[in-house]
Image (cartoon, rainbow, N blue to C red; front, side):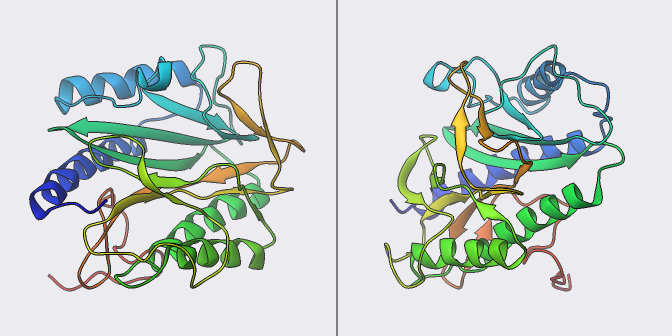
Length: 263
């Protein structure tokens, strides 16, 4: 489903606001906080400061503003007063926002305090893998090119890619066509067209790719107990390539190692 220019402009505004949520979190000490406290902090910021709606709250019956996935939690970690972020943890905060009828979706894995070098490498590789997928986006490319680029980068560094969860189209609804797999073969799948908007959100495991869902029906963990990391951006296919609608001020438009264009 392609978007018209006016729709893309509104989605870009939602993306800009969502990026500001992460900027706020970047300057917030997270160690010692519960994930429920972080959920409340983010909700206040979205509702009071941004005058927007936290789109995840109430979606599919979910009662919180964000997912907080700590260490071996792959995704959909439910905020809890008893889950306190400790020195050495990694935590993915997955947040959505709706403004003017359009939704943006993004996530970032945070390093809490002094993180083990092996965990840090996993997190860095997950970030780079997301950008490998983003750089494959352009008109005329295929969705399989995105998954192939992500999986190739992950495997080169010795990590597995979760298959059970994928990126998705997004706009007025949280989940729209197409599904965006983070693995697969280049040259297959739907052709990318200008105006398409979707998320790219690979989850990389330090061990095997298998996952299981805990008894709460939400929390997904690695089957072998290994660490997992994820990053996510909402992107739009442009006439010349790709625009990252949720790009944060600290990021380069082309990803790690890319230089900003001169102003």
